[in-house]
Amino acid sequence: MNRERMFLPVPRALRRFTSSPVRLLALMVAVLAAFAIAPPVAANAAVPNNYIFNNSSVGIGVWHDYHSGTYDAVLPAYSTTKGQWGWDHASKFFVGSTYCYNAYRRPAGSSGAWQLAVVGSGPATYPDGSFAPYNSNWWLYDWQIQLQTFVGNFCGLRV
Image (cartoon, rainbow, N blue to C red):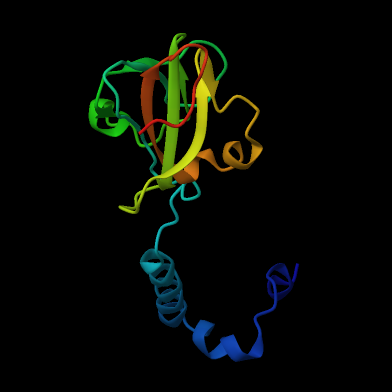
C-alpha cells in the first residue's frame, strides 16, 4: 500500500510549514493559541440579568424560572429578587386578591427611569398570556411592583 495515498493532500501553500515535525508542531501550537485567546461565549448571553422589586408593604409571589404552578417564593416588602436570594433573573409575579398593582419596568441592568407597563388587580399572575407586547420580552426588563388595596371595585393608577 502506498503510504502517501493514506493521507489527505497538503495544499502547496502549507507544504513548507509541514515539511518537518518541528514546523508542523509550531503550526499546531499557533492554531491552538488562537483558540485559547478567543473570548469565551457565555451560555446564557441572550438572557440579561433582570429582577423584580417589590416596592410595597406586602409580600408578592415570584417565580425564578418560568413554570406553571405555584410561585417559588414570597418576595418580602421593599426587597428585590436579586438582593433577597441572589437570583440572576426572575420570570413572573403573583398578586393576591384585594390588591391592585402598578407594574413599572425599565431595561434590565439600567438605572433609567421606571415606566408604567401594566395596571391590574389580584388575584393575578403576570405575565399570564395577555399583554402580548410585554410578555414576549419580559426578561429584558427589571420590574417594580407597587400594591394598593382596592377602593370599592376600582383599580387604577394611584401614585
